[in-house]
Length: 195
Figure 1 (tube, one colour):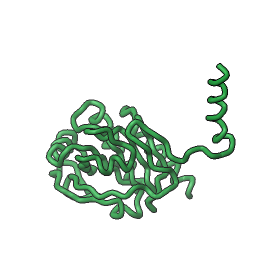
Figure 2: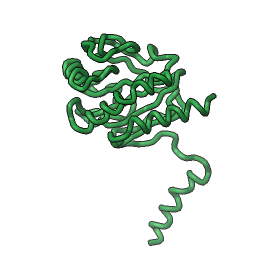
Figure 3: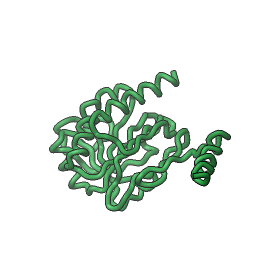
């Protein structure tokens, strides 16, 4: 019993001294640090109409190549998810689609990332009426940078990145229902705290 008390006390020492770890661990690895530059990425994907910012419903999902540097000057909601057409992933994607106009009104782009290939992403966009880009990370290279990979799937994590490329918020072990509204509220809170 004394040993357990001693160990419990030792784990509190860094917190009391203000030495709390800056990186959080999640089921998919270490999450990137808040208030630091977001991990860089470049991935192939699909977007309806083949355009990141002006996609419209009913447009064919065309191949694109997107890097974080192309999104400078805009807020970015980068969400990782396990697999196209599964129930939770479909629910989450529908939520982001439903709130997409509100994200765009806040000068924010929404981008989904999974290990699915471009063909699966194009089919998913078409069947669900998604008009935001989906990127393919088949080997989990980018997902690992974001602490969001357990082979062979990306984990359900979301990251809010500001227009300067700084990571402002992160969510791990996301519950798909209502998640897009949670992210939108945080985006609006972040923007109002800057103004």
